[in-house]
View 1 (cartoon, one colour):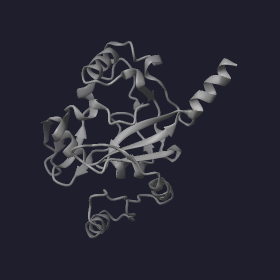
View 2 (cartoon, rainbow, N blue to C red; view 1 turned 90 degrees about the vertical axis):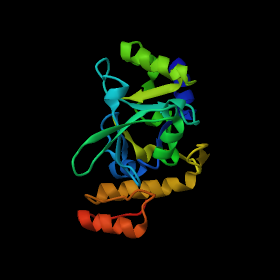
View 3 (tube, rainbow, N blue to C red; view 1 turned 30 degrees about the vertical axis):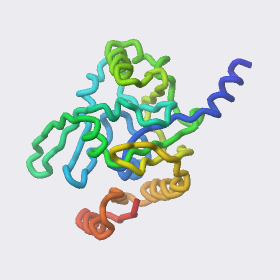
Length: 230
């Protein structure tokens, strides 16, 4: 009976992966929420290629790379309280770190988004029950989250990529500097279309949402790739 109750509770629960429109086209093209450190660098309209160096967040020695989810739909404060990002010069490969305030982080991320997944449908476990929670790196993550007002006991993790086609909710923040998410489930069918297209069409290119259609076509032509609008 206890197991049956747990299944019923899990079936009703939703966990969210928070990202932004800086990265959504990369998510649609891969079709998965990747574990930390595996995602490609995102191309920012003004700053060029931007990456979040997972190594600056933790050494990834105490537990494997994971993807992160939370039961809370509000944008995690750990994502907006400042971060160390870096840009990479597309010609020289030179790396330049960006240490930023919350306003800078929001501006660089563009519009915040969240994908909601039924807990019972994806391979996640509660962070508080995961092996990494009580490690040195885990404790450091927990303390830094609590310092800015987040509760790490709300988190879930997966050691495997999570299939985007399992998403049941989509949330978007219309404002960049004041990110308040609003549910826009009508966009789910478009996400499913793009992910399915990329799986069926090798090399399919989904341009960033901020790129003008004519610029997207030029980029795709230069790369020799089929293109679909995101």
